[in-house]
Amino acid sequence: MEGFLGLTLPNFIGQLINFIILLTLLIFFGYKPIRRILNERAERIRKGIEQAEATKREYENSRIEVDKRVSKARDEGQMIVGQAEKAGERIKEEARQAARMETQAIVEKARLEIERERDSIIDELRAEFVDTAILAAEKVISNVLDKEKHRILIEETLTESAALSKRN
Image (cartoon, rainbow, N blue to C red; front, side, top):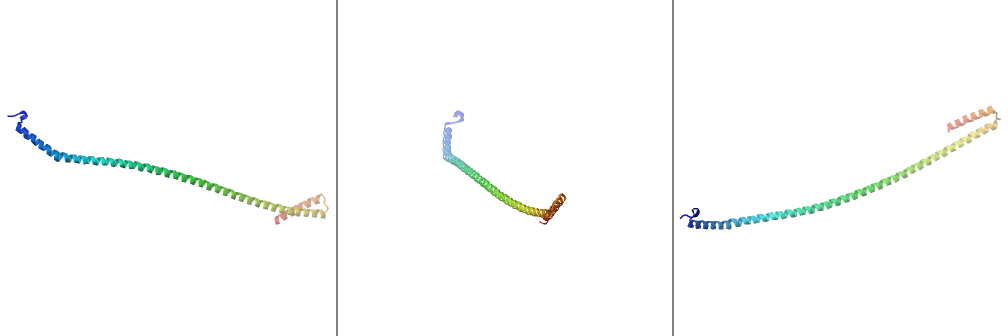
């Protein structure tokens, strides 16, 4: 007797037993190993994610530390540059002071030299003037002067003083 969908009871029981055996074998040999493999894979993925997060945290910490060091180095560099600028300004000011002092010394030396030369020239002019006055006085005393003799005497005196200047 054929039953529903062409199945008979003994056939159905045989197929049910085969199905149960196959299901048991699949569970025992297939499901457990597959489940174990999937669990292992899930565990590796979880560890990988944790490791990636730890690496990310480490990277962030390292980046923050590097930023701090760079900031500190930048501040130190700016401080060094500031000190160098101050030292440069101080050196320039010292050089200016030295140049001023040297300039003042040169000016003072030149002023003293000019004064010495001026005094020397004045002394020479006085000596020449005295000589000229003495010469003129000698001539006045030795000659009685009229207008013509006076003019001649002055011309001679000037000529003689010019000749004395050329000799000196």
